Image (cartoon, rainbow, N blue to C red; front, side):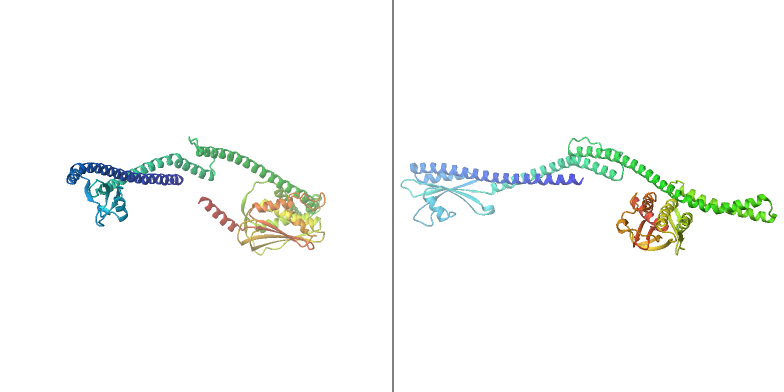
Length: 500
């Protein structure tokens, strides 16, 4: 409606300016015409009286001429008529209202018309000189009050003003009605539809019967909604396909890690299998005393449980699951990951050690995904460390600020640190280590997906990974995750903003 009001006001200003200008010109024209008509009438009357007076004066004398003017004066209601002497020898002779210059022109035989006085006393004087042979010169004076003329002009001005105001009001009403129906109502519907589109509602359509620019805009808005719906469907489909591809990629990475762990697990299972086999043979032979049979059976059960635990860890790690965010102890994840990778590290003669966490608490994450991310980073450290070295895993609660590409203020974060004692990472490679399929390892040693998958998982959980390396004493990876209580508060604030 604001646009309709602006158009109405602009139109009203234009109409008012035109009507006021027309009224002013009409008033001036009426004044000029009325004044010209009055002056013309007086001139015609003065000339007629002059001709009559001159004729009577020549035939019947001056007395009859004066009587003629007196009779004419008595018969006129608006005009006062007099005969005034016009003696060139007398300075006081002639009309007193004329200036010396005007008086000289009158004495020279020219007709004179002047306006004298102010307000209610304003009058028009018209003089027609009379020339009769043998008689002293004189002039016929006609004077008329301009009060009726001024009253007529004022009445005309009032009538024009009233007519102008009526026209302005009528034009305003018409412009307001047209502005509402042609501009205001369609624009209101367009704005409401735009709000619905902004809120995500692309289903409804705008129906306007207008065949102007606003109607074209409504048609384009409907077409835009159709295109947005189609684009949303394509984006949704592509996002789902991408999510499936990412999940398949992560599952393949888990299977790759499982394959690398297989030999270590086989080595780890060898010892308890030998123990079980040996104890079982002793029981089978039957040479053991009865009391030792129970002890050997207990040892067999213990070793079987140990093997079951190792196999379960491997199966849990390799099994595909959907994302499931829940409060989880990050220290427990780190301990289990270190335990799962210890057989592979032992096979490579590398020691993996988890340093006791100074501060530990829950994080709201998907346990399997975070374990996969941490396993990829630790496995990368194991592969980078030469035999006889160690990989240290630590956990701490630190106060830090996210990187510039992630919005957020400084606050507490859980930091899982993985340090190896390998050859380090070249400076030109640090910016590329999280890129998919980027690897500096020999052919067959890695696919270049482990760190990329780990980075994607941690980023999806609202965290990030920092990496540093001096190129001599190994590399250090730091995985930052938000504590569960802070993540819960942030989710609550985001929900409140969306509802408001």
